[in-house]
Length: 407
Image (cartoon, rainbow, N blue to C red):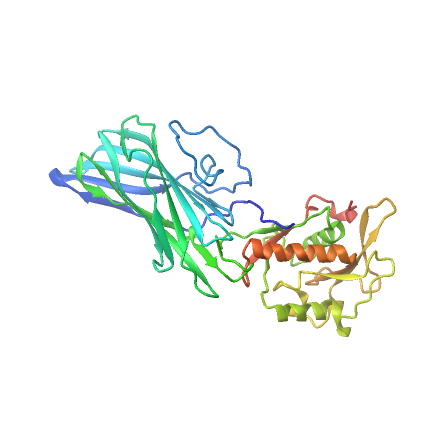
């Protein structure tokens, strides 16, 4: 069954505010939020585990977040934001002390629920010249406020740190999307904090946000309601063992066509076409109507017409062409040893590979199974109209010059 790859997405824009407040006796407390790590990196589905930081007493809902490198990582349903709040106390412009706090934030969405949770962990990295620092307020604002109801959990662990403290403070919040009938809504999160130290009587108030943490909730697909990170481009993973001929055929087209449809390597995603009527028109022009001139090769193992890019994608040849005869023509040929080979169909002109689409004759079961996986993927990952997605076939390491022997 097609699933979303658990690859972390690229960094989106973040915004942190630096603040300074002047207190009595000319004592000023400044605070600045800084992303943790110079660059954001991609994370695999199972990031390598590292030793937990000293004093850790709780685990968040996004298991891979805490010990990965990078300041911002996310999948379709999990987000990880890692940063530092740097506090500096000065008197008459001269530093008298500082503290650096590490903040790990996790967001756990549910593609089949209106509810999602956030988890925050705060710990002390270093402190010099001041006796303590306290988090006096941590507001996690969800906008628009009419779109989400918030249930704020208590802090577990003290929110005051002294020099050498190794304890952590954690908190879990729960949100519920106030769903819009028949529609969708984008929710934004912003964090506003207050920090104090005895050396400065006025609190510092750093705040930050991140556009990659925008959350889209909808009730348009799958007969249910759910929430995802729309800036993450998911991947349809095809079942190579279940339909080897179809998967290999898609891969050959992804490699050979100039447009590389669906290829993550070439950064050429497909885009969902939610209009079923238009998708049927695509299918008809590519395969079904007389104008398609569908004439499968006599050596083909199966005569089902399998078009790629999919009819339910905006890259379908049917969106711009009048007939599938203008696509690359191939067929699947089952060998005596049970393996499969793809062949170019000499009933048609040899391809230039500048074509925008292909179609192949193959087993009906493989064609329909692949289509079924696409449908389930669309629902499970909450693809809306025009949403991008990549396709992974399982043949990514084949030698294209051998046309791949498909077992």
